[in-house]
Amino acid sequence: MGSVEYRFTIKEMPVDERPREKLIKYGAESLTDAELLALIIRIGNNKRTAVELSQDIINKFGGLKALNYLSINELIEVKGIGNTKAAQIKAVVELGKRLASLEREEKDIVRTPEDVVQLLMPEMRFLTQEVFKVILLDIKNQVISVPLISKGGLSSSIVHPREVFKEAIKRSAAAMILAHNHPSGIPEPSREDISITKRLLAAGEIMGIDVLDHVIIGDGIYYSMREEGMI
Image (cartoon, rainbow, N blue to C red; front, side, top):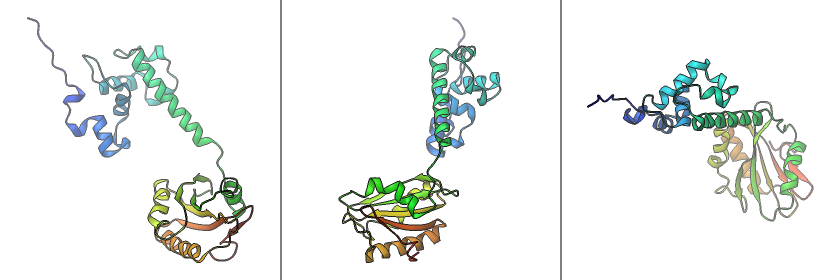
């Protein structure tokens, strides 16, 4: 009988050391370059684990940066990497490039109430129910995102600071502008509008996120609490 060679595989690793489990438990940033690449190619072969194959690729070509330029034929020069694994790697690299290009696209900049109106008036002026949004800004006043907070009317129970600031914290926003519409077309603030604004201003001071304005959108007209000296 021939001898049997035992190999240490990813499945035999302690659970907390397996790339997929590590990512789920600790986040993608906790993985090494080889472990991240191993999750892409998924399986090794009868001699090398996925992590070992990934490290072979990194070693052969001098780091992850080379993946931007390698062809399928160059990748399959690594023993254990066939067309399927090479295609998986190239697909993920291409996704990374496209995400990077999105980051470089010109972003909307909001510095004045008129900028807010230009951004939101086309969408919000004809709505038949009240919608509350926040414009999240980075330190350069570039728009990060405009998440929807509530629909169907404003009240302190619906527009809660927790919901307003949750996305801001998640996206590392430096500041925000509050915005909602009045289906009547008349943007004069109600007592509830003013009360909610004061509450969110106080929460923003605690959170370290500036609330720059609260803009109410009417039918072709608007009301800025900043312009009116209410903030």
